[in-house]
Amino acid sequence: MSVWHGLVGQRPVVTSLSGAASTGHGMTHAWLFTGPPGSGRSNAAIAFAAALQCERGGCGECHECRTVLAGSHADVGVIRTQRLSIGVDQVRDLVRRSALAPAGRRWQILVVEDADRLTDQAFNALLKAIEEPTDRTVWMLCAPTVEDVLPTIRSRCRLVTLTTPSAADVADFLVRTLGVPDDLATYAARASQGHIGRARALASDDATRARRREVVSIPTRLRTLGAAMSAAAQLNETSKAEAESITTELDAVERADLDAAYGVVERGRKPREYAPARAALEREQKTRAKRRHLDVVDRALMDLVSVYRDAVATAVGAPGGLVNEELREQVTTLAEDGGPEGNLRRIDAIFAAREQMLEFNVPVMLALESMMVSLLPPVDPAGGSGGAGAASALRRRGNA
Image (cartoon, rainbow, N blue to C red):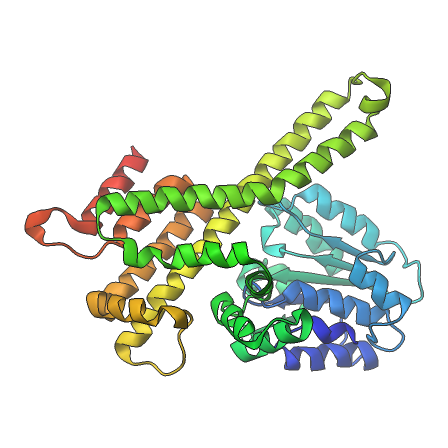
């Protein structure tokens, strides 16, 4: 099984990368992998790193391939973060490593996942290393789009563009790797909208499917202002609980490792250096928890978008299947009630909430309240201000 086995629906990319690894055609010292979330850009970078270290161009069976894929190869360094940004110190460590000769006979490879999260200082530290590479060093950066990387850096990289895989490709991958029934694989492929990690979770976890069903049922429950506020509160609480369930165990392991490193358990006392180290760890864990919460909320918002997208497609008679085929009756009702223009405005409201939370640091609960009110159906002008008016009032409250 080759190292390219896990890349779904990316045949042109595999052809190009495998050719560079096997023959050196098109090989360069810096690569930029772009593609929508879940398309597998970091997986493509890791697979390419394995292929470059492999004598057979990525067989997937040799020691080099297995250690790269497992994250333990001596000549492949990876930066990945659970925080909101990647700082200059992490990048400087990679830059120092990039100047070293590889321990093996082939390449020193540095992979930066989520390169769009690099701070300005980190980008500047990286630029010099990419401008003046050593002979056997290869940089691989991963980002959603080329615009997420400084022009001075992306101009020095060869671009690899991944696309959203088709539902058929994702379903086939799930059947092949997880052994799930065809109908479940088809549902997970549609619902994930091409996000491979999300598709795996939907295909293998009942709780994940239940949470998604709860989210996509929201549009049909939004009839009153009270319902909108309740939906916002419920989405905020469930997403926070899901995020905490992911981070709590990791936090505990990190605290135990810190205690062991400073000998707190064995000696029964805390050295002077322990308190600042513990404070720094807690700050990092708090930042990670915030990012995880935002990630979970963001995923839920994209599930909401899929419902209104289906309503628009139904209203205009667009060809192709629905993302939420199992909700066709509710989607048809939304299409009739709001029309394509009304449902497009609702999609705009969801993306506005995403921007408020991710770009402008608006509190999650306030952004969700404003969004849910904007999703309400229009009301008789004599009966009140309607969804738009109430949403404006909420935004004014947040700016006060």
